[in-house]
Amino acid sequence: MMDTSSPASKIAQINLLSVYLPADFSHMEVADKLNIPLKKGIEASFYAEISDMAPNRFLFFTQFDVITFVNWPKEEVSEALKKLGLTQSYEQVTLYQDYNITLNTDATTPFHVDNNKIELRELSLWPLMIVSLVIAQSVGLEKFEKEVDRFYSKGRNMVESSTSFSWMKRHEFADYAIELSLLRHDMVLDLMLLDKPNILWDNEAYERLYNRLAELLDLQERFEVVSYKLNTLKEDITMMIDLYQHKHSSFLEWIIILLILVEVFIGFWEIFFKH
Image (spheres, one colour):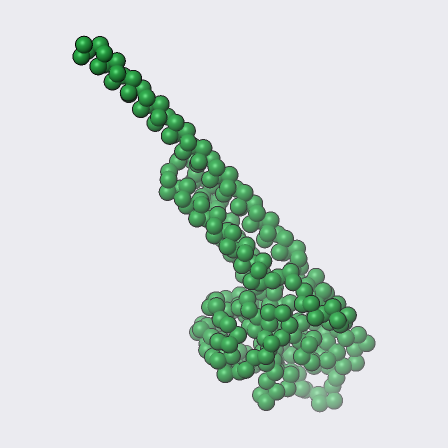
């Protein structure tokens, strides 16, 4: 909530909370469930300015299923999330990131961002939408980081248990490789984690705000780590599939040799014992 302890104060704080929604919603479904019309924002985001409830209160939603509440009381956040299917406390059941944003109208620069705070000179739509988008990207990336770690553990177990050949095991590796490809596709195309909104090129201050937040949250580095893990897993699984195919080919070769030997034996049997 905004700090209004001193009416004459030019410094205030509001809270920002970004929450990952496990269910896959369109922006129209979110707007319908919350009864809040959403307008198109930058890139894959939508927004609503709810001025009739409180000043500087905003709602942002991205197409990669992260919703961001700016200057919402916690109880109203919980109520909104219940309408979106999160009946339990979001702290316990899903990913989220929260930050305090400081308004300082006396600041000499449009913004200041460091490890401890996000400070803005004005709480207008565009700066808040940029901050919300970067935080939402961070939450979306965290979701994929956890997914990749889960795949990493599963893949390691599959490789370690791959000492014996079986058709089912080879089929399991093939399915796993397909799942990895789909996961990377979702991360690159659906989340658009590396895409800076094109419209920011027209405003140097907004572009610097986006770049500074992305740098602070290590978006690029984290994305590269996840991509590296995905590529490593895919290479390992491909190697194991090739190994199984080689074992399968060798197995078939031995069957063919055995059948030839049986046929030769039968031929000799007929020659020497029937005649």
